[in-house]
Length: 80
Image 1: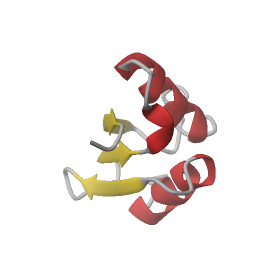
Image 2 (image 1 turned 180 degrees about the horizontal axis):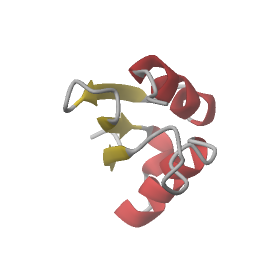
Image 3 (image 1 turned 60 degrees about the vertical axis):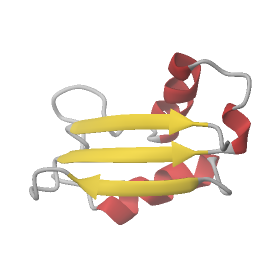
């Protein structure tokens, strides 16, 4: 079952309430998404640490072939 962009944003927002989050449906199929998450809490973390934190916020929705979220291209950064 495909996820809506608003669902993805809501899951991320639970962990990053003040983040600037941009969600884009890459293929128009509800299965291939990109997300850009800009949050103050990423300061001092490397890119892998930032992305792990965001993936953890998805609460298993990307786990395995039966996950509700098939693909997410993720960009993370701290605000300039």
